[in-house]
Image 1: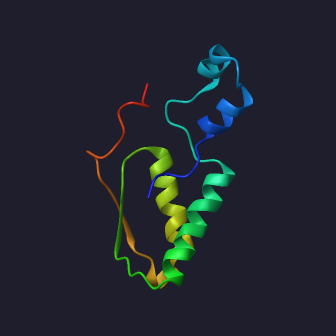
Image 2 (image 1 turned 45 degrees about the vertical axis):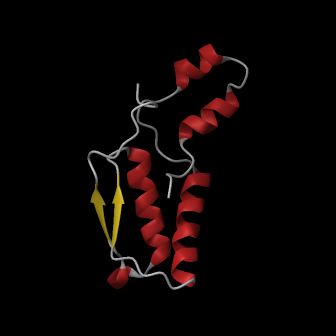
Length: 98
């Protein structure tokens, strides 16, 4: 699963047509937006509802990936059933990091 919508996506929409303003306001390490939070949580609920068993979640060390994994986990299970989240330090995208 890809990370949820990041705040840079929101910023891009806000400054559409003005690349200089977008570059001025974009973040190197953005959090996910409310839309990203909701979609990550709903994906966790959906995976659980179709009875797919998950015992661990792997994600990169990017803030948006960690947040997405956290909300996916919240949607997936109750506290005692939640899979562990593990960072995969070699698994982050290089192109979008400035």
